[in-house]
Image 1 (tube, rainbow, N blue to C red):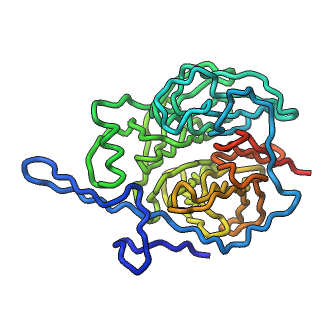
Image 2 (cartoon, rainbow, N blue to C red):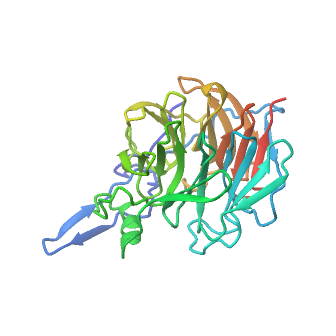
Length: 364
């Protein structure tokens, strides 16, 4: 089922343009009166007509015993050693500026959900996505510090990727979501609210970047930029809030293109391979690759992207052609699910922004 989009020119009876910001601002720059006009894509509208019936044995429920300060679950990852990592904001708002004085990374026992340890206090302001590579290193994005931070398996800081901002850059990048031709920076190490990161078996890291850059950046084992692709838009290889990223066993890059309500798949060098979008898939907030290279998508609902959009919480498994082969539902459809992880036996974990921070489904 195709997703409907309003006309790009915004005209038509009863049609309301859903843009990243209200209006179409115009800015004059320099004595020559250079005018930079923006035409950001409207949010794709997800039909509610899809059949989202879910079997009684395919329900995710609150799980784990994290500490009381672990509120607003932003990310989740599963390690090769049988631990589950919950990333949380400690109750802080999205893109908050306060340094977290509690540990945002919580380690839980995968068998029992018991708390094992935590770490990261004093490092983050608004952590967003978390992943674990084959060496057990932990990668975390932060949408306020605009850095990707790498930790050893025991939580020691290894390094970070991302250059510091100069004066006025944050404002420029925010405005560029509307004035899409506005030149802010040519520095490829400047992240602009990066959302997620996935590291390959070779040690390369692919970053979905993010709320303001609309690109994928690929970095080598030394943290050097190798390539990047994407821009704000709704064509192939264009993004509107690239929100989650995962890697298949063959190196393909899978991206949750949230505001465009679709999943895009690329080769490791950025060549567009496929796009999957339908009402049955919903609005992808995250993607994950499970056992057997199976692809899973987290449908986080439309409340943050559509005017009057509905809250929703589902996980779907996709066939190679993008059709939905199986569906799971969060028991509370108002939990606002944010990130997805798949365990070695096919367990599903979801970090959620509202209520219990972590949810799980376990195969019978």
